[in-house]
Amino acid sequence: MALAEWIWMNGECVKYADAKVHVTTHAIHYGSSVFEGIRAYATAQGTAVFRLKEHTRRLMHSAKIMRIEMPYTEDQINEAIIETISRNGHDSCYIRPIAFRGAHPNGIQGLEGRTSPVDVAIITMNWGRYLGQEAIEQGVDVQISSWRRMSPGSLTPMGKIGGQYVNSQYITMEARDNGFTEGIALDHTGMVSEGAGENIFVIIEGEVYTPSTGSSILRGITRDSALTILKDLDIPVRYEAVSREMLYIADEIFFTGTAAEITPIRSVDRVKVGIGSRGAITKAVQDAFFGITSGAQPDKYNWLTPVR
Ligand SMILES: Cc1ncc(COP(=O)(O)O)c(C=O)c1O
Image (cartoon, rainbow, N blue to C red; front, top):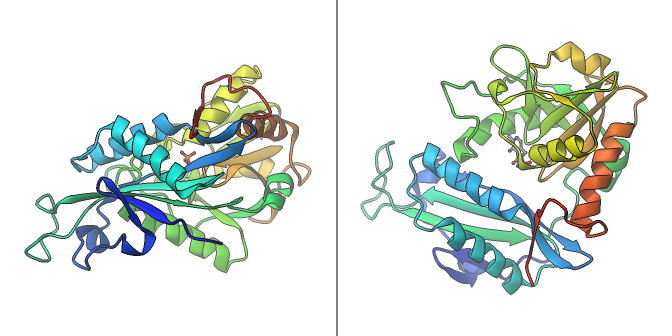
């Protein structure tokens, strides 16, 4: 797959090979970065970014949590994202804005890091389905991880902060080593939190449950999109603590995430979910979601920002 030609870095587009940092960069040593994952879709009406404003807003929130002074406004980041996609000529792509504590002129600094400059970059790449097209239709096999999701009070689950993703890496590596597509982490109280990079919805006897922000989740933008779609479909959602055994007796479970989009889960710990294939509510949410992101249905929630 061809790499993008341009990366936006600190206010200008530079060639892919020139978007470099120094080894003393604070974020490499201590995880002091904040980032986003966004998709632009090739809709019937042209390339469009999905929920651009919400992603940039969350980037700003992550920076605020991390005490990173963003050198650009939300509008400037939004414009830079559009410019980078356009300049690279993507029809569809994955977009990774990142802000991080950079290299100090006097070398490695202490942990605190606030004397280091802040660098900002926007990277784009061509990208298909994260868990595969088959996963969208057939579902994925997952395990409950032996790793817990980070607890609030030791870290900040609501921020999308680089260092915190060591937790997600442990969860995914363990799942892959055990032959599963993904792992689901319990929170510090033992209730279901979320996947390594996905939020979770559980359907039991027509009731939809999703863990609340009190369960150490990232407030997913795809989660919010699924909640909007479910509301429109007149399907009520209960924001309740979800126990592990609810996953075993569920009729349907699905993941939401920028990477995973809306992906059904067909087994948990090798226990079949419902009939073992995509359920009716999952399909209804997918139809509405992919209807909008493909441009086949009107963008009634104003989720798409056209690139050109
Ligand atoms: C830990 C975690 N949970 C959930 C999500 C899903 O969030 P979103 O739908 O905004 O991509 C992500 C992806 O960003 C994530 O990294």
